[in-house]
Every structure is written in structure tokens, then in C-alpha cells.
Image (tube, rainbow, N blue to C red; front, side, top):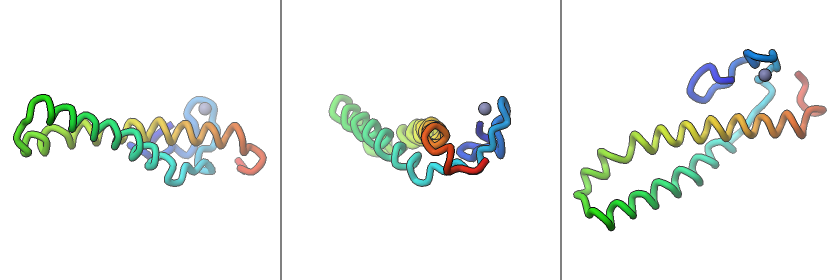
Length: 95
Ligand SMILES: [Zn+2]
């Protein structure tokens, strides 16, 4: 379904459904912010309270897993939003 990290292919590689009409807008980013932001802040607080590491440890440890999780969540959310558009707006999307 994807040709890059977050870019749809022009068409589905399995069934040939054109994917260009499907636009998740900011929905995938909102899902990423809400889900990953919440998980990241809870994780940081738990680790900080439990282990009290110096600040630089947080700066080194968190960016990579948060970025990876954000990309994964946004891919899932974007695909889910495209599926919802396909399901509910078939008459409106010309394909
Ligand atoms: Zn398909």
C-alpha cells in the first residue's frame, strides 16, 4: 500500500485499486500525536520517577523509539482512514 514511509502507491499492488483519491488529511498525524504523545509522556514520567536518570539520558533514549512508533502509528492510521473512506464514500470518490 505504501511506496515510502507515509506515501501511498498510485494503486494497490494486490487488487489495483487506485489509491490517489484517498486523502487522510491530518488524521494520521492527529492519531500519531494523541497516541504516541500520550505513551511517550507516560513512559518518560515512569522512567524518570523510577530511575531518576540525568536529563541527557532522556535526550538520547527517547527520540528514536518515539519516532519509530510515530511513523508506525501514522501508517496504520492513514491506512485505516483510507479504508474508512473506501467503505463509506465510494460514491463520492471517483476511481
Ligand atoms: Zn488492494
